[in-house]
Amino acid sequence: MHILSRSLAAAAVASVLTGPLALGADLSAGMSVGKPELKSIGPIAFGPDGILFAADSKSATVFAIATGDTKGVQPESCKVENLDEKIAALLGTAPSQILVNDLAVNPASGVPYLAVSRGLGPDAAPVLLRVKSDGALALVSLDKIRFSAAALPDPPADGLVGEGRRRKNPRLESITDIGFTEGTVIVAGLSNEEFASSLRRIPFPFKEVSKGTSVEIYHGAHGKLETRSPVRTFATFTIENEPHLLAAYTCTPLVQFPISKLKPGAKVRGTTLAELGNRNRPLDMIVYHKGKDSFLLIANNARGIMKVPTKGLADVKAIDSRIAGGQTAGLSYDTVADWKGVEQLDLYSEARAIVVQRGEETGLTLATLPLP
Image 1: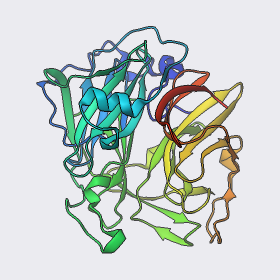
Image 2 (image 1 turned 60 degrees about the horizontal axis):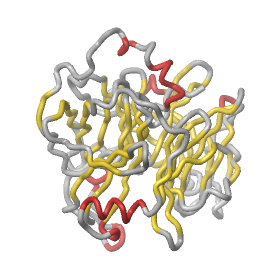
Image 3 (image 1 turned 90 degrees about the horizontal axis):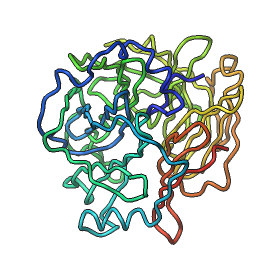
Image 4 (image 1 turned 90 degrees about the vertical axis):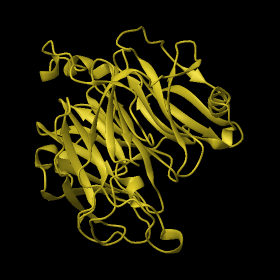
């Protein structure tokens, strides 16, 4: 059984509330009151008591925001058609100027939240939205709220590097995904170290932020060790009573890391469990359960939704040699053929996922779907 997925699923709340943060502590105590100065908003995840963690890759900072959204009755399902048009209308712009960067469900209330950019490029404005029980969208005001911030001590430089199509700003990948588990925010992204790919654990409530763990992987499709490609999305999963990260990379290795080895300044090599096909970028990932079985669900930009059984995960032989020609290897998977165009994904309940889907002609839709 996984500990927690990228955001705390409603089905896992009971296990969270028995942890060390549940001992009567006010998690917003010590937070500042004001407006968090987010320069961008990317991955988001929830902790207990309606605490939202928002990644600001431009400033290489994780913000903890006390939403005050701590109770509610979750509808059995949720659907918002023409999502991009409705967001654009709410923000006074065109649908072409909207990016939905992430989706997370607040386990305390069952409410879905959306991290959105208004505008494209470096001047895009960060926006946080919530989806009300009737499907209407509402702005989450960031004025005069309780918040705290954890600035990463070793982010990559802010500026364009490289040539041609490879020219990019590495700062925008300082945080590529975040999650919360057992009192700790886990952050994936790039650092300024030689092994630029980084995973770090930040205890919450925030006090200090240590250097990250530099990670390397064997990438079967490329036939070599890699240290500079960031984790794109991850989930947590317990293997033989030890918590692990299951992390997906571009092009598309699936790698496991024992969370206990993610120590400040350490260098760790992950175990490559699968090569899921090249020319593909993983977008989002959750773990869910059916009966006694657990599955990993991965959304991808080119290879659809992959359903990966986790049975026997501890016995999978690590991939340590080249997998040529775009072939797959290691853990097997099924493609969920009727889940088309999924760009964002989270657990909604024990029986349903919630997704942002892009139709070929209909733009974006937010919908809950029965878990496959």
